[in-house]
Length: 145
Image (cartoon, rainbow, N blue to C red; front, side, top):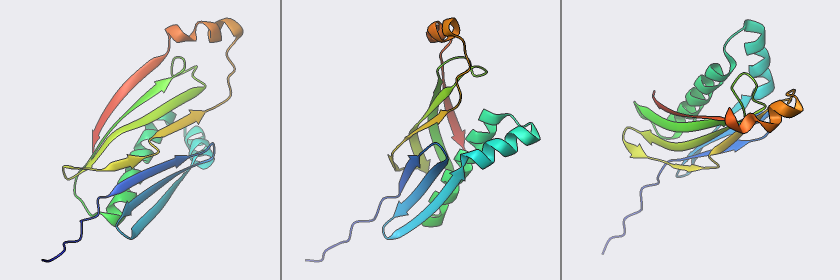
């Protein structure tokens, strides 16, 4: 009787802190580490006048694809995520990004540590904070890269 070795399933692991988001792609013994330096990215977007949230999401998506591609070559990656802001996007001091699904050429990946919290200074007044639950927004995003 012959033993077959199980084929390793690719895994994406997300670890976020206030300054760096680390994206780790793993498959079998192969590992890819990709970092997003939030302070540098946000400062560059502010300087260039780029739309901050949209640009951040593009960078996040491409960084996940790069980490995955180094350990699991693929053509098309599909990512589904949602983000929730604690107020309107213009006034939000906290945005939570939750990665719901990642697929590479139709293969569903395991995602560990799938929540990224983006926080900033909260300069809203007392009443604006008190009524923020009315303006809280959640958006779902589906991308094919």
